[in-house]
Length: 452
Image (tube, rainbow, N blue to C red; front, side):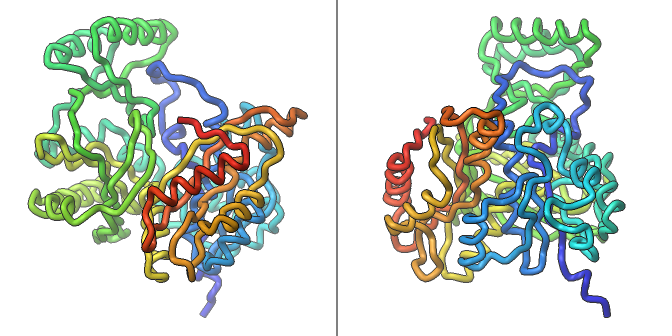
């Protein structure tokens, strides 16, 4: 028997929605932040928890050597490229190309020979255009749904229709012109604030809270200008709900349609953007059982399968302040940040502990390195080690330093830049506040400024 099949190629692009979205659709007003776009392009290093001992992880930029050594030392086992697939200063071309484009246009996988991938099964974060070409180029086994199917089921229009088909609470409506947005929006404002949602908006982008007629008028005028340039309008609008908390359910649909529940994670969101995940408590799980929430997830899985989709799913949900549960806010037919957190939990469980996943956005200048960060965490006794049972487990390094690298590629040194550190906060017998305070002390001692 050939054992070369026994490993997976873990790979992905975290802004998958950008590649599903119709470029001819009008966009909502948003703040352009090139530094955070660079951070997102470096987030694929967060996929390492999905890897087994012989699995291959390909990242846009080679993982930081000190970070990878630390992860291997504490028990994460995976192989990965050590050099970049493209220069960090890729400019506009780099922002246009997804990782599968980079893979198929290269003779080598970073520093690795293409034979490195022989026998691998493609295991993407999300199915986006180019995944099938990469599979063909390197002879990868794959069983992914068609990208057109994945695009359809990830649309918020699909989530809205799914709610209606399952007869779940749904007060969303779709508008197809700026005039319709204005008239329907004015009607909604009589009851209170409302949200405009982009069909493929994600993590703080593409959700706009409308609290007054003046704001609505400015948004519709902004969209009207785009329509005059040939753009089409298609947005979802819905009343703004007062929520108690956000949570998500992760499950998997097998190629034969079999449903497998994975986890429920409570979410920390700020201005609609993901801030972190922690395991759902017993109170929430009890409420979900009482409300037949998990039956709704099974029905959603059945609908997704009938639509042609199989694979990982993350359904975003809400508990409202009045005690009602909104089972399906939107469907993410892909892997997710909360699924990464669950896989880190699986690792921690082997060592008798648990953690929450979060991040901190930092500003800094100068020559601070990831080595120094690890050494300082270790010196202060808060770098996670299995025999210690608590501490900070850094989940990323490139996301912290990518803009420093980009700046230096342009010949600019010591420029203040922005980065983001993702980490797991592992309580052990201690407490989160003490660990968070110690982490902040370490970061400040290294001249990082925390962006509030």
